[in-house]
Amino acid sequence: MRLKILDRGSGVLQRWQYAIVRAFLGGHVPGSVSVVSYRRNFFGKHFAGCVQEALRTRGEWTVAELEIFAAFVSRLNQCRF
Image (cartoon, rainbow, N blue to C red; front, side):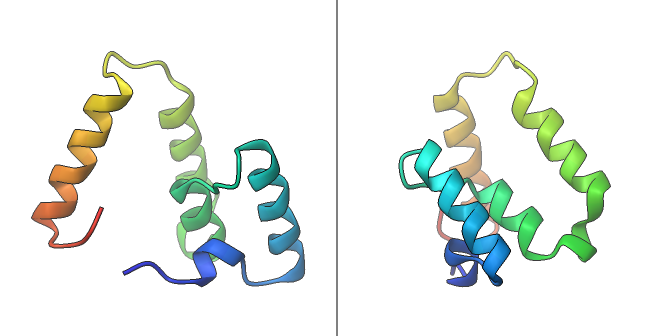
């Protein structure tokens, strides 16, 4: 289940930021951006830094491999990917 607030934002500033992200990414806000911005006080700047490092660091796995890993973990967690 995905919360609708993750797709639209909770405040005026966040909705504006999401609109900019959608404009640059073809109508899609990445899940990591949604999670970090949804509970900023809970996840904090340290988690956001880790997410940025993980997304920006070039890895040995292809996009397809990452998608398979995500689907597998989602299945283990009994949630939809």
